[in-house]
Image 1: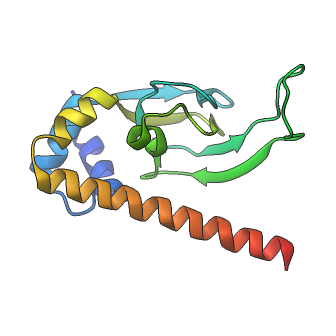
Image 2: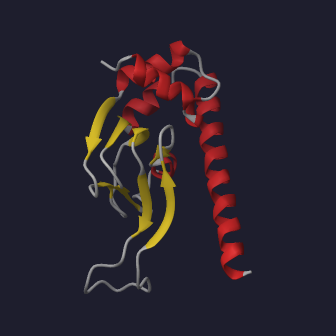
Image 3: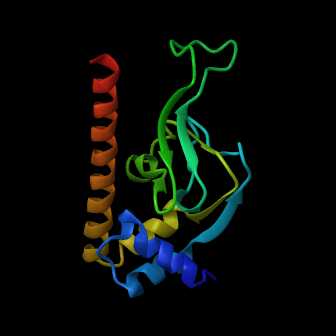
Length: 159
């Protein structure tokens, strides 16, 4: 059973902005607290069926990893996409499009994450249109913000 700290983190997360404590408790009650050690992989690129996460403590890096030897890929090196920390979400692409992970997520330090499965997430989303509209809009805004940040970084690199 999640404690009040989890509710506070969920309250601070952009994903759940605009939801009441009662709504947040539905998520908190259906999720779990998980831990990862430094350098442990949380999600692997092309992994299917992984949960959705909110970072409670620690930092994680989102990368496109260097291909394993023998793999046919044009990627020749690891590419850093993002650095995420407390309140940030992980796995939102797959949560929405039900496709395997598009990147790898690695713990940069010991991390504590809130984890909720797709099925539990969908159960809660289906409770009310308000919850669904609020959470999906927030995930869309987060995704747009990350894309705009990426565009700015590319602009700086090639300017």
